[in-house]
Amino acid sequence: MTVGQRPGPLIVPIASKPMALRFVIIGGGPAGTQAATYAARLGAEVTLIERDVVGGAAHLWDCVPSKAMIATGAAYEDISAAAEMGVQVDVPEVDLPLLRTRIGGIVGRLATVGRQLLESQGVRIIEGVGRLSGPRTVVVATTGPDGSGSEEELEADAILVSTGSRPRIPDFAQPDGERVLTTRDAYPPRELPRHLVVIGSGVTGVEFVHMFSSFGSKVTLVVSRQQVLPQKDPEVAAVLEEDFLRRGVKLLKGARAVGLDRTDDGVVVRCDDGRVVEGSHALLAIGSIPNSEGLGLEAAGVAVGDGGYVTTSDHHLRTNVAHIYVAGDLSGKLPLSSVASMQGRKIAEHVMGMHIVSHRHLDYDKAASAIFTDPEIADVGLAEADAFAVGRKVRVTKVPFATTAKALINGDTRGFVKIVSDPATGVVLGGSIVGRHAAELISVIALAVTAGLRVSDIAESLMVHPALAEALADAAE
Image 1 (cartoon, rainbow, N blue to C red):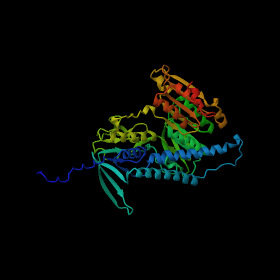
Image 2 (image 1 turned 180 degrees about the vertical axis):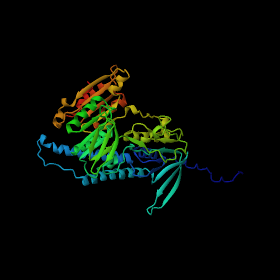
Image 3 (image 1 turned 120 degrees about the vertical axis):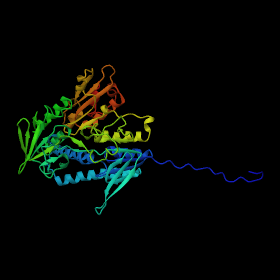
Image 4 (image 1 turned 90 degrees about the vertical axis):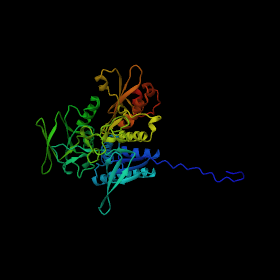
């Protein structure tokens, strides 16, 4: 620049806006929707692919409808028992078409709200079938209104596969949706079974036993072990078995179903010990299998383990391909919607780099679970039997609901609260609850287990009176 020359404008190069991380999610169940929502809030460009319904088939076709039917059954039983509380009512009837409409309304509302939440966060939702075509590419097949198909390839910096599971069908059975039912054929069935034979005494099986016995169906439960809920505390299972017997449920213990034949007006179930059960309907409740086929996992180099579950390499739920994650039932972890949701959140945190700051890993041993029978069953953390099996010293305190005023007021004194704690420190390690509202009450113990609280923290809490929660404070004494 020469003397006296006026300076020109200062030109400063403008830095280009960094490209948002491209996060593609296959499967819009609890894991996928939670991951999508949270990652979008953190600034990711999120695409969610769902082939059925936003919210997840297992969640909206299994969990929600079954609990809606259980709630209807509870209302039916409460009305039937109202006379014991001083209320005279007519004999109630179950209106299946109205129940079906109610369930459809609940599912539709939840799906709509879930979709609106995702869209409000800027998540792109594609209705179609997704598959991996390479380590960083996802192909989505969609069908237009006219039935024509098209495909779109998406580039991704991170991928989550959370395609859920489906009911397991044994070799000896052929579901027809009329007499031989899977769990998804029964929300509700076309007709109330006169005599339902339930095959499978796990969580799903016992919920269906309770559900249909509350509607007045005769029920037989085929129990392959010597107690229902073989993975649960024997005291918990005993309370449920006592209630089943009170309802007139027939328990075939130590029997494994090996054959199922359809007759003109019913079914015949054959067991491995020679026993035979005839009923009007049969329900298969023997677990689920992961939806891992047709996902292109091999094309992306993702390892698949036994049973079709995708192998994870660390607590961030990464597969052997570092930027590809798996969650929900497909991960082979605890098959709970609550666990899947938390997995989705933790994956979003890792994808967006939040794990380098304050980040708590998901601890499956501290996950609360519930079974919506009557009485309800809920547990969390270390079980008494498991502690004794490994020789661990624990303090176990148990208080029956019969000692609380609210249980007497409700006219239902069944069940108990059990708390497992460390005898040296008083830290709450786990607990189980059997009784009315157990699924809600377990939250207190779950919080104590997660936060490392002591039994004294529960005992010194000022509980409402009269309330069932008082049994929690009593058990913590």
